[in-house]
Length: 436
Image (cartoon, rainbow, N blue to C red):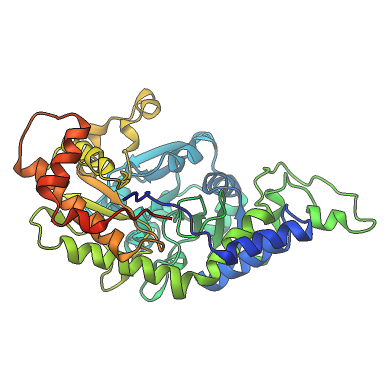
């Protein structure tokens, strides 16, 4: 059996949308981007949505929009993908990394301690699709002592009058908080539509605004749409109309717009998301929990509580009592069985660049603890029930080898034979199925 980690969902409706873009001969930013933005507004109940070419570019744009500059600080978790920090660095500001809680998300108590008069924004990361504790984060940024520390140095900062709360929602489209889309819990929410995400546009992202009423959502939308096109007064569709060639550059923007041919993929997927794709992800997560819950080493990932529900982007399995080296061996053994697994994430202070600029993993013990025993299992709508069961049995087999059968490392072909002959029950029952 061959089970990849996270292939994109491509069905006939996706193909039809892309073909329509090609047949209409309009492939850059145009009507399909606009339609996708409207679908995102309806899904999240956000005020407006602006599609961009990646999460990273969307984050850079919004930090620059807020006036983040050299000398400023932005608080982020140490446990996230590098883009969270790089977006801050691209603005010339300093990422202030803090540790996470046991649910993978940024620790609000650590956030409060890290706030200074230089703090302009907090980027909270919804790891695996699980929403951060936005109630506590919103409380912190509205406390009088925190507001009194805030120094407004741009027009947008003066209008907001406090620290900007940004949700790095790269994983969490479809997640909920108190019965609402979790995107409503922050000032700005930024989604990723990278190839492995719940909704993909191959490469892409979307910025959702839920700013206080003193901001005009429509005004900000129109400004940010121009920002994605180098500050140009007209987009390509407007320029293409008869006599519409003349344009102006109004300010220094970025070139980060999403093309229609990419939006077409996401547009087809989002129409099936709430009723088909997201429920299947939830079902798979439930099957994993049921299949693993009797194992005394299984740490159930955060999926749902009284206030929050994940988007089921990842199934971040944690294994009690294993070392980082054992975790790595389990992933290698799973690969020998045809199951591709991953790790989310290598904490940034463990990466060469961030070590070179002074970050040390010893300062983030919870982030390391989560990383060292975490394995992300395949979770996507195309997985069959047989494949899910195969993943469960394979995980149990490979973990048991590490926990119960201490041994010297064997050649990989020996590992596979050992698993097939001695560990996995009814291994041959799975036949020669392959994932399509």
